[in-house]
Image (cartoon, rainbow, N blue to C red):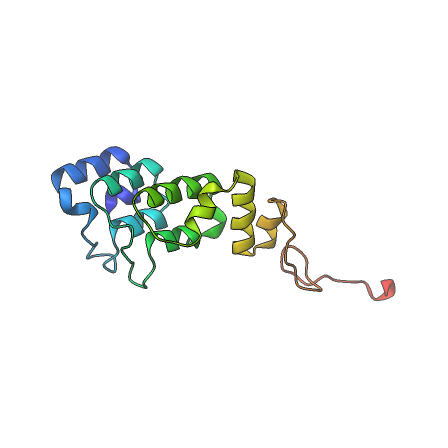
Amino acid sequence: MQALKQNGLKKVQAALADNPEAARDPFFDFDFDMPLCFAVKSQCDVAIIQLLLEHGADVEAQDAIGRSPMDILMNPPFPSARNANYTRQVASLFLSAGVDHPEAEALVTATPAAAAAAAAAQVNDPFIQLFSNTVPTIPAGHSVFNMPIQVPWNAV
C-alpha cells in the first residue's frame, strides 16, 4: 500500500516481486481495500495500474462500500483532480482486462474534448464546467462560486 501511496512504479514492482499475490490481496490495514481500487482512488500512474492488472488484479473487485475500480474511475473521490486523458487510458486498460461497465466503451472511444465535457457534466461543478465548453448548471440567484448574487436595492 505504501508503494501505491507514493505512486512509485519501481516500489510497486519490488513489492510484487517480493509477493506476487499482492495485486490480489486486500489491504487489511485500510478497510480491506483491494490494491486496484486503492490505486484508482489514489490516481496512480497508468503504468502502475497496468502492472497490477498484469499481476492478476481483479477488475471486478470491490472496495469496502461496493464500488469496482471502474466505478471509482467514473466517480473519483476528488472530482476536480480528474484528468480526462488518464481516465480514458485506465478505462481502456480495464476494457482490455475484461471489465463489463456500460460507460467504459463510450468513454474510451470519445474524443478528449468530449470526455472532458462528460466528466465535467458528471461532476456538476460550475467552475469545472465553465472551462470544458459545457453549460454550467447554476441555480437561479447564484454565481459560479455558489454565492448569492447581491443586487443593490436601487438597481431593481
